[in-house]
Length: 381
Image: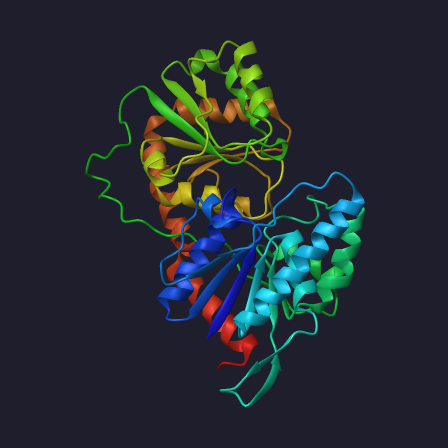
C-alpha cells in the first residue's frame, strides 16, 4: 500500500515524533511510505528510516497580515496538491489541526489514475487530532475553515473517548474513532540490576515539553519553590524549548533556584535522560494524550501529574504509580512533589507499575490497529 503522511514538520512536540514513529512502523510492515512536511528536511529532529521517502516543501513562514497568510496558504495547498498527485497514494494520513485543514483542501476532488487498478479512484484522507480542540482553539478564520474541511475527511481520529465525543458533536455525520498515541518500548535491565537511575542523592525529577504557557512550567517552578526546604536531595530538569524560556529563566532566578532547577533545552537522547531520572512531573494546563508521559512511564518512572486530560487518571493511578493534582492548584502540586520526593521506597514500586500500564500503549499493540484502519479505509482488505 502507498501511504502519504502529512504534517507541518518533524521537529517540536509529541505529534511530530509520533508521525516519524508511525512512518517507521508502516515502513517496517512493508508499505511504501512518504512523509511530506511544510518544513525543510534539514530541520528534522525526528528521523525516519531510509526506506521512508521524505519530502520537505520548504513552505514554513510567518505571515504579517491576513493577505500574506491567504497567499501563503494558497501556495501551500497548490504545492501539496501537486505533490500528492505525483505520489498517487492509496491513503493520506494527516496530523495536527492546521495541517489537517490544508491536507483536506489539497486533496479535495483529487482523483488518482492507477494503471494497475485500471481506473481512477478517490484517495481517502484520514486526519488525526493531536490536541484537545475543546481547549486549544484556533483563530476564528481557521475554525471556520475547519468547519468546511473536516467533513471531507474519510475518518477523524481522536486520542481519547472524550475528545472523540466532542468531535462527534461538531461533525455528527463523520466517522470518528479513537486511536491513542503509541510508544516504542525499549528493553530495560532487570529491576534487580543497578542502572543509571541514581539510587542515592542527588535525585533527579524531570519534566518534558515545549516551553509554552499551556505546559504550566511556571506553576511547577512555583511549586518547587514552596517545597524547596524538603527537596535538598533533589534537582529538577525541564527539557524543552519555546517562547517561554526567558520568563521561566527569570522566574527561576527570582526564587534563587538556579542551583536546583535547569532548562537544558531539547534532548535528542530522551530515553537516556529518563533512565537518569527518578520522578516525572507533568504540570500542564491541558493535554490530549501526552506522549512524554507515556514514554516516562515506559522507563519505570513514577509520576506527579495534573489532571490535564480526561485520560490521565487512567494512566496515573493514585497509590499505584503516581500522584494526581487538581489543575491550577500550586499548593497541591507542591505537596504532591514533596510526598513523592520524601518517599523513595514508593518510587521504585510505583515505577514498576508505570511500566506495566505503559505497555498497553506499545507499537506492538497500537500499530496493528493502524494497519487494519488503513486497509479498511483504502479498500485494500
